[in-house]
Image 1 (cartoon, rainbow, N blue to C red):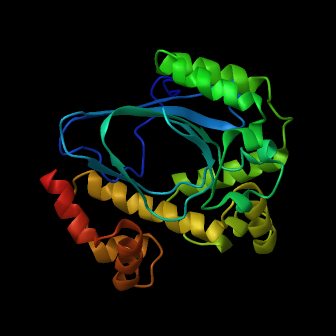
Image 2 (cartoon, rainbow, N blue to C red; image 1 turned 30 degrees about the horizontal axis):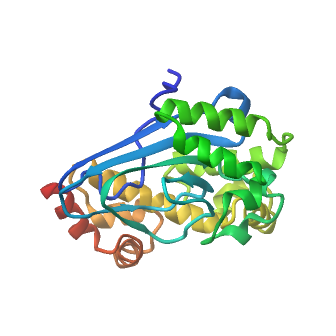
Length: 271
C-alpha cells in the first residue's frame, strides 16, 4: 500500500508524545514527486498553551537538515547530534521542511558536516528571495497553503539530480528499516563502498558518519518499542541492537534520552 500523502506515518523520535496540559498537533505531508529526491516531508506543529505553564518537548536526532519557520525566527538547521529540548508556551506554530538524508547538499553546495550542530539564516543559503518567501510562509492561512508556497519556491530552485544523494539516502533508509544492521561492516558486505568511502560520502552529503547513524536508529528502535507499551527484556534488546552487554546499552540510552530505559518506560506508562 502506498503511503497517504497527507499522513506519511507516525513520527519517530518524539520523546514526549503528549503534553501535560494544553493542546499540541503535529502534521506532516509528503512532497510533490518533482521534489521527492531532496525532501522527505513538510511538517507543522501547533501548540495552544495560553493560560497554562510552559511545556517541554523533546525529540531525538535524525540524519537530516531541517528548514524551520516560526513567527519570530527562521533558520536552516544541520544534523543535531544530541537530544533536542524545547520549552513551548503561549499559542504558536513551527513550519518545517525535513530534507532527505543527503538531500540538502545540492542546495548548500558544500560539505554538510559544516552544518552539523549549527544553524544558518535562510537567506544565507537560499538567497535574498528567501526573506520574502519566509514572510509569505508566515502570512499563509494554514499548513496546506504553506506547503504549496514551499513547493513552488523550492521547485524553482530544484538542483540537478546527483546519484550520490540517492546513494546516501538509500543506504540510510536501509539502516532505518532494518534493526539487524548494527555495524558499518554489514553495510559494506551488502554492497556499499568500502568503509572509508562510505564515511567520506556520509560526511559530505549527510553531515554525520554511518556509525553514528546506525547507533541513533537503534536507539530510535528502543524508544519505539518502549512507547508501544509492550514488556521489554532489556538484556535481549541490548543484544538485538548490537550492544556487547546491557550496561553499554543503558549507558548510551541514558546519555541520549536523559534517563535509563526503565525510567523512560515508567514515565511512558504513567502518560
